[in-house]
Amino acid sequence: MLQIMVDIDSDVPLFTQLTDQIKSAIASDTLLPGAKLPSIRQLANDLDLNNKTVAKAYRLLERDAVIQSKGYRGTFVHPDAKQNCGQDINDWISAEVQKLVGVLREGGATDSEIRIAFTNAMNK
Amino acid sequence: MYLLLLIQCALLSWYLPSLLHKRMRRVITEYPPSDFPLLYPKEEHEYHTFHAKFLLMNRIMFVVGIAVVIGLMVWGINVMQEHWMMLPWGMFMVQMIPIMVVEASEFNHLKALREKNKSPIRVAGMQSRGIKDLVAPGLFIGWIASFVGAIVVVAWTDNFEFAFLGDAFSTVLIVVVMNILGYLYLRWLLSGKRLDPYQDPEDKLRYSKAVTKSLMFLSIAVSVFMAVTRVLDVNEAQYLQPVLMTFYCQIIAYGSITTTLKGVKLEDINFDVYRQSSQGY
Image 1 (cartoon, each protein chain N blue to C red):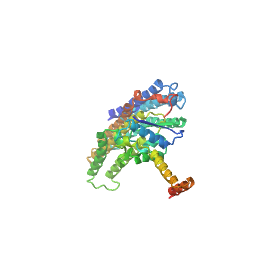
Image 2: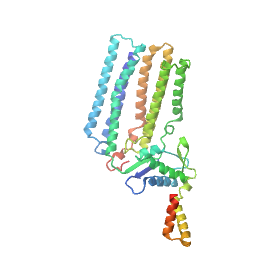
Image 3: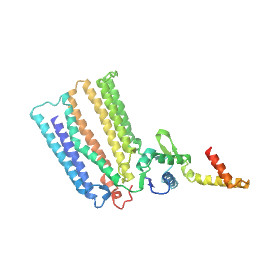
Image 4: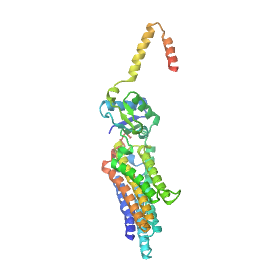
């Protein structure tokens, strides 16, 4: 049985510890597509964590199509999980932002103007 | 009937407590506090005293129970009447007191373990523990069927009229309430707060399976018992109710205790998590 271990004293956020371990278990075929995962409540209570922490980890994994929720039947490993867990959305975000910043600088925008524009965009 | 009551005394106050006592002694002998300190938050002598008191309480219950049954025989009291139906139940409730004390002390023990656990490392198994994941489909279907069946049978005895607070209504209410309470307790055990902070996830899964199976049998027994009692009632066979009651008490006690003991064998439990060097779960 796959076991998840979290260190509550670690600097790595708890939800990241969870998502990383689930992704690496899928990548190493320890968790196979279609496998049923524990409910949010069960995992949170077993790890003595807040339900919201586990829910956040599951939500991020679902967004990345690594797991899928099937209502009352529970949460399962996504059929394409192995391909999808290799993609890191943070890397993609960094690359896209770098591209955009490059374009704006070429257009003559200063760094402070870019920062203000980003802040305004994020606050909308 | 007297023989059945004597068997009830022997089973509930001698045989089953002896099984539990033997198991408690085996744990502390084979996995002593010196090697497995995390398993024993209290002083060792307190466990020995508790085990001795448990056995003594049951032996006293056994002697008193036998004396009561012999007294009934000597005085020639006919216990095969409806109003004696509660005798086996009353005996059962008293006989279960020491086992309830063990259950309560187990919760205290686990609470002490949690309070002593300062490890920042926490481990969980990634296996779902839904009710349907833990028991055979046949048992699950049997549980639902016995619940629905009991309601239908009881309703049938009342020509499906269900007079408010009538006998049939009360019987169905008991079946529904008992099954709901059983289900809620099971859900709390399966996905509620972690009780033992060190328990290996594999052991937790094994324990969950055993308890689920045990509670399913218990719920089926309640439904069947209530339906049969009602059928005896309407067929004016109330004199059989004390016999049914003692059978019921013995079956639920034997079934629930042995299912759990057999489902979680000591040899299968990972006791290494209770060693001092354990990183803690």
